[in-house]
Amino acid sequence: MNRDQRRQQMLASLPLLLQEGANIGELFAALARILSGEAVDGGMEYGLTRLLRSRWHGLARGWEPGDQTPPAASELGRFAALYGFPPGPHEPTAAFRRRLLEFIAIHRDGLTTAPAILRLVALVYHAEASPEIGWDDEGRRAHAEFIADAGGERTTIRVELQDNPHSPSLSRFTAVLPGRRLIVNNAGLDPAIPEIRLRPIATPAQAPVLIHANSGLRLIFAGSVPPGATLTLRHRQPPLINGVPRPEFPVLLTNPFVFDGAASRFGGSFGGSEFAGTRFSVAQRDSSLPTLEPGESAWTYDVMSRSELAAFLGPWPELAAYAQSADPVPKAPSADIELRWDESVPASLALRVPADRVPAAFAGDLGAFVRGLEWALAYGRAAGIRSRVELALPHVHERLLLRDELTLRAAAGFREAAPIQESAPPPTPGIGLTDTLKPPTDALSFGGLFDTTPFDTSLFF
Image 1 (cartoon, rainbow, N blue to C red):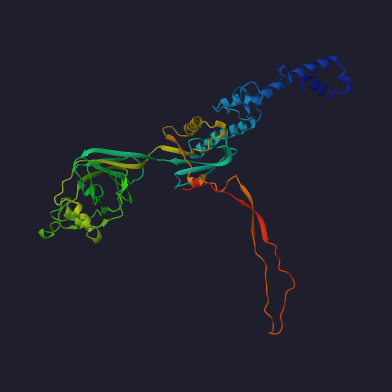
Image 2 (spheres, rainbow, N blue to C red; image 1 turned 180 degrees about the vertical axis):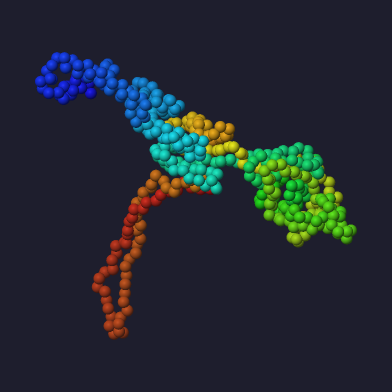
């Protein structure tokens, strides 16, 4: 309302006799100028409007597509700058106003929580609404689902936030002599099952054995490893030699409760001389590996003698021939040993997002998109918490579409000469029937329209 309109409104509230007074008119004109909403007057209404627009996101003036000033210089953009939350390029005012409201609501509910981080990630995606958040993996992984324009289409996005994610770790030992104590440190929070690699240096390793000193478990490979070749032992999987599976060689895991004969090299004695060279134990042949508990664990390396290997293979007569791979008098060569495992990293979190769903706001710039996700993690996490972004590639079945937009339509006709003939036997020997109608000579034909949809067979493996 301008000052003239406000002056007339105030005069209309007076009696008609007083409306004609000059002094009263000048008084109301001054009051109207003070209460004016025009910028030139700088009145109370104009100041109140500016205050509301500058402080409230719902009334702050935004921008239009044809404006010359950048969105960050508008009232809404300057208000968002107080929180370090600038508008995106080519983002409409209504969409940014909604994102700003969600951003302020996150601060009201509190940061440094998994829901807060997932809500910040949804803001990076320019989600249409607040995400739906759930938990799985016994509360160690949170996931959020929301709708956004990504990957060239409006689709549902699922992101996951893993607490204490697994990270690959290894311990490498070179030129290990038999009987040497190897210390392996699992710095994670959870137990892990390692992958063990052994490479003899000079001579073959005949029936190598790895002893887990903490539990007493002995991992025996009933075969020979050539010098320079790498033996890989995996949990409940066939062993590998130079990357080639060798399922014919058994891998035994002995029971930790073992009573050794007097002549055994792997422990104490049991009984007297009549038990010399005997072994009492139980072994599993499912290629199981010992577990690395959190903290330090000790390992030793050696080879088996032929008699000792034959004692372990005794419960399986079909494996008795593998005892010949061991030497009667064992001599273990030096070897390079490596243990690999995935450890649960403490005080860390990982954000997993689909790599093929880059939001339209980033115009296909994957680097800028990853930087936006890193900002969300750094802004929402607690101090001292390490974070990383994982780009997950889609599975084949998620990309396979059993349809094709190109449809082939074909019209085909099928003609076949099929003359119709029929004859009936005479009912009695003395009566004959003759058909006076000529048999039809028109060929039987029919046509049809067939629709076929081809499949892209290159998508099948």
